[in-house]
Amino acid sequence: MKPFRQQNRPVISYVPRVEPAPPEHALKVDGFRDVWQLRGKYVAFVLIGEHFRRSPAFSMPESAQRWAVQTRQDEEVEE
Picture 1 (cartoon, rainbow, N blue to C red):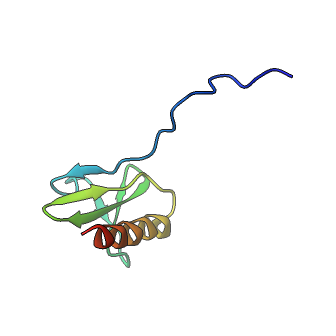
Picture 2: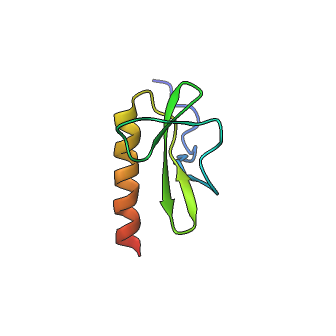
Picture 3: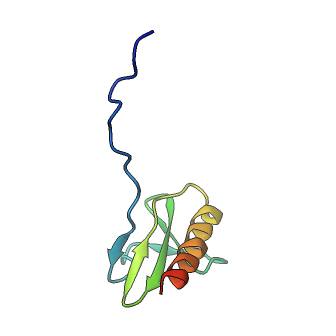
């Protein structure tokens, strides 16, 4: 049996981008607190301290909102 290639490959985890504000061309999604539509995908922006954390792009607004809620909870635990 052949061994898997790249066995020692590091795991890349998502680190939220830090931005001063949601971009001008982002459209706020009605019915969601933190979700914006950006290039056909849904992105959450959560205000932590003085900066916004940006989520990865999701295909559903509910997923982006769940990410925002989870991020907000995680930040409260760390503080």
